Image (cartoon, rainbow, N blue to C red; front, side, top):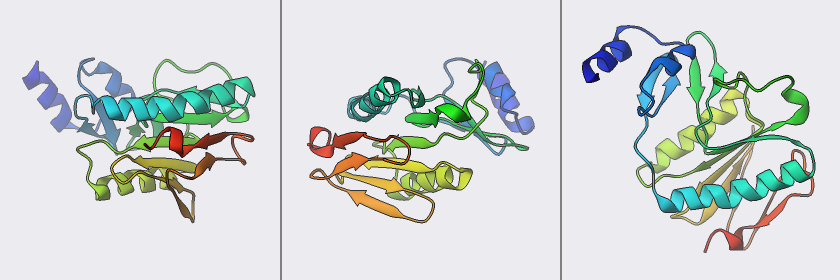
Length: 187
């Protein structure tokens, strides 16, 4: 199987739909038609932090009928020809932007909010580039949490706000009324 997979990954640029032909235990994203393998599970702290922020935001979204939330590794097609499909740690799309049935494959549009939690093996540069990639793709807000530095950077098109444990995460333009004291997360 490794030889077949290696052959598939090096012969040509892949499409978003080709991702669904790869082995199910092969974690990857697609960047401009090229497969980028993902490391195995990034660990307990990473998962805990995603859930701690994502769950609270999701409850607020559903309680206020604001839109749709997506769990880690949901693929979003953010570029076409060659295709790019990336999977954030958590994401949100406003209700009026996602009409009809949610596809079983990748979501064919860019989220409004993306949460990324720095993995233990991410360099600071790689982590910053990932936030920039989402903003360039059209995401309105990126929440980039660095557990080592105990900071959450709120990226928007032309600004970055740095929040610390004593601050409260809000997003009034997309999640009116949402408030999360970071002291509950960044201990």
